[in-house]
Image 1 (cartoon, rainbow, N blue to C red):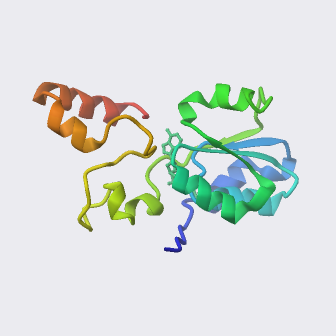
Image 2 (cartoon, protein in one colour; image 1 turned 180 degrees about the vertical axis):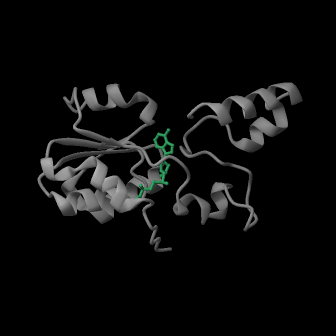
Length: 156
Ligand SMILES: C[S@@+](CC[C@H](N)C(=O)[O-])C[C@H]1O[C@@H](n2cnc3c(N)ncnc32)[C@H](O)[C@@H]1O
């Protein structure tokens, strides 16, 4: 299935990031690469690092952006370590477009959508340990309530 995700606040994001000045930019939620593509369109000389925890997103972004971006598997909560592994210690711009992507919502097997039938998975990283079904079926009601509270007040 081809996904034509419309990047949110594209003009506002690129205006604030100002990629014309060049340097190192990190997209911590690469997704389908819409924002990254626009940053590179404005300045093809950028050193662009794209992070995503979803292998399907990384594959889609890789096909779209070809070799113009260094794509890294990981969670942006580890952004310093992930950047250091690329010998990057400072960045000129960082973009976080936090949320689910249409790639995740449109695939019933990912378990994010109410629209289609599918197992209750909801892992952004399919290699992650527990599915939402595991949690719902094993946690005590109190722990489930705490989890729900914590995840809605902290970035995952
Ligand atoms: C809204 S989409 C990004 C769309 C992207 N800006 C574009 O224009 O195509 C959000 C992406 O962030 C990823 N994501 C969400 N939380 C993350 C995290 N903590 N670390 C890494 N990636 C994350 C998701 O897997 C998803 O691909």
